[in-house]
Image 1: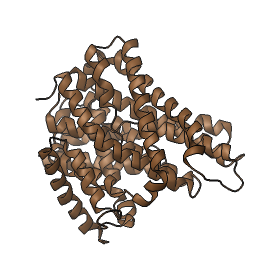
Image 2 (image 1 turned 90 degrees about the horizontal axis):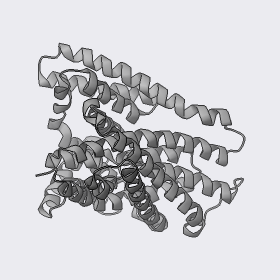
Image 3 (image 1 turned 90 degrees about the vertical axis):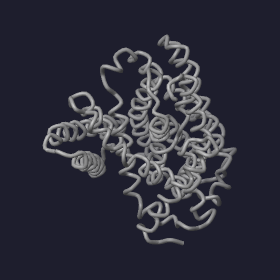
Image 4 (image 1 turned 30 degrees about the vertical axis):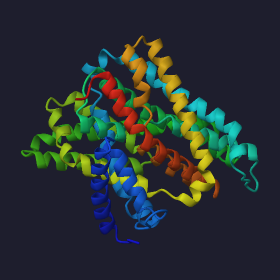
Length: 406
């Protein structure tokens, strides 16, 4: 086993490169290869990378990658482009997130006692079931921006379908963060009766969103004016990475959302900086290694021993979430009178589930009871891994049908 973090990073980079090439040879997007490369290095397969390295020593790399992905998503929300599609994006975002949340929560309320056999001293089984169902339901509303961005970057996808999809994903992640904040507060009330007030449950999500917006606006305008001192692309890259790390770090310290904060930074730059293109183009030279590290690390979390215990639950989460996303997207597209292409294929673009989902379930691990948290984390990560192996080819298919990739 490799215990040195720097050696682990090197192996992940080389492994994801080889996995990406193998995936391309099989006519699959590189993201699929990155995930498989990480899985092969996990303790469950070749036992190269221990969980202590992937979960703790390299945790900062995951935070940086998520920050860059969120920043890029925020940069796609250019007001002039979104203006014509705003109605469709709003309806589809709300409908598909609500569909995934309701389908998953209701289904798990019925299935949790059948799929697991777990009790906690001092807490009723009913409270545990409700807490887990609500938390997983909120997490299931998320769509992975990283997988979609990686495919857009690889195939240079561009057009109204791509703009609509990116807009929905960006707003969906913000909505998911709100849902998760509410769900985690309710779960704490159920698992620790009398310790969380209704007032805190109502106020906490809005405080988190407001604080994230404040940090994002300050950092975004700081980057906008600071970049005027840069003379070279490498200097611009230094400032962008610095802003992303500051936004993520400040959000973590102040208990805000690093994802939402960085999306707002990207949004501010894209809409208020005349030369905003260079603040996003400089990231292209590091996109592939960032995506490779992020997704191979996600794959390296795979634990087959716990997956055996939570396998049915993970499969149920995968199927139920997909059904909720597809039904919600269809409903939102019809209500907003979206184009036939959006109605038919946008749901496929919302299937990926990775970065935000993994990040949120690791947060949930901290407040869920011991034992239950292991089942939930591995069931969700198991569903993510299955999802990410299936979803990228479906997303690529959707872009091809929309006529927006070469």
